[in-house]
Length: 45
Image (cartoon, rainbow, N blue to C red; front, side, top):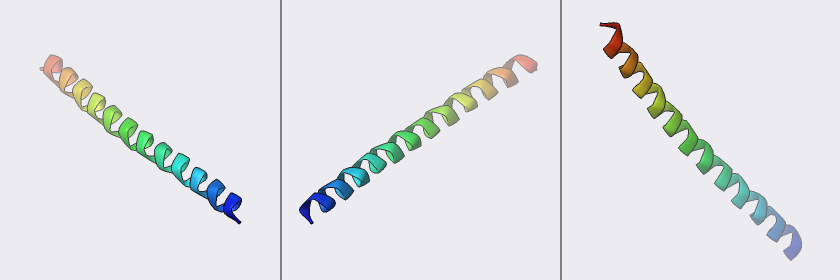
């Protein structure tokens, strides 16, 4: 029983880490997208 609990905890932790990295990636890519958009708007004037 303890083994199964330990395994599910490991799975949950890895999922948590994956979600966090996905969120961070989403934020940074969104930030870069905004920067590129601003850059393009600046030069299209």
